[in-house]
Amino acid sequence: MDIILTADRPTGKLHLGHYVGSLKRRVELQNSGKFDKIYVMIADAQALTDNADNVEKIRNSIQQVALDYLSCGLNPEKSTIFIQSQIPELCELSFYYMNLVTLSRLERNPTVKNEIKLRDFKQSIPVGFLTYPISQAADITAFKANTVPVGEDQLPMLEQAREIVRSFNTTYAPVLIEPQAVLPDNKLCARLPGLDGANKMSKSLGNCIYLSDSAAEVKQKVMSMFTDPTHLRVEDKGHTKDNPVFIYLDAFAKDEHFGAFWPEYQNLSELKAHYERGGLGDMKVKKFLNQVLEATLEPIRARRAEFEKDIPAVFEMLKKGSLEAREQAAQTLDDVKTAMGINYFK
Ligand code: TRP
Image (cartoon, rainbow, N blue to C red):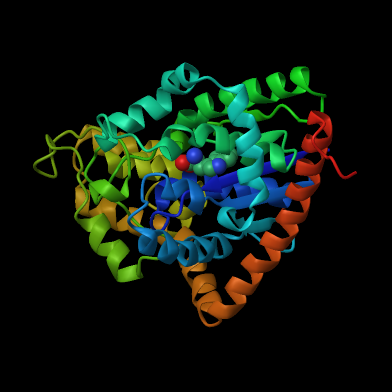
């Protein structure tokens, strides 16, 4: 059986960085027909581990993320889309896995370490936050997922999950599946820079193009993008490396976009060559980038408008997915309890 589990924390709407880094890939994996099951989880319980006093934000984001998923082409007929907090079995699994992990092991997890620093928790680290890698192991193993598409920052989580699986399987009985991480296939997809050239598109930095932005918003954002600061006059030589406009073109432009929008060039290498030798203004390149982005965003926006017409149907889909996911998690929990010898009434 080949089973995928992927997830996002619902802490806001999703942006182009999420799209190139994971959403696009998920849709491709979904449509490849190579997987027996695909679970896509909205990790609200994990999001609460550092947002205990901001449930409102998490709750509102669930609808946004669900709309982002559907409008990008995740299809509830093919993928089980569900909400983490609606699967209480995940908490039970976590509770048993906690006995297999030491405090020092948790404190060594580099991603968690880094996040603790970023959040400035100092001595006040919520226990739930420190232990979320254990609950993430529960997320993965509950669905017997062997394939987990993630970004690089999630590798320590996967390693920890694998350790928990091995420990469980040797301590009790081999009922859990060891998951493999699947990384984005190229660097570009791993991290899209922000509109300001910062190395990451991120909500907290305010440098994002959201999948739900209107055409006018996208255009305004593209036109005000950071480019090559040494390219002052049109005739100056330009740099395409580390220039976010060209990095976005690397990620989104296809040869056919030149035919459709800018037939003076055959492809991106020709355009880059012109920019580098001088004589090509930023405005023209940005105008093209806007057209290229719209080729991706316009269909997403159109599908979103359809789904937005019936929000209760979106929640109905999430409810159905959660019920389905719960059945699988309950089955795994039963296997786990049997392996541990605590299924007393069976
Ligand atoms: N930690 C992941 C993130 O921040 C989200 C997540 C929760 C996840 N549970 C998971 C990812 C299980 C993969 C598998 O993006």
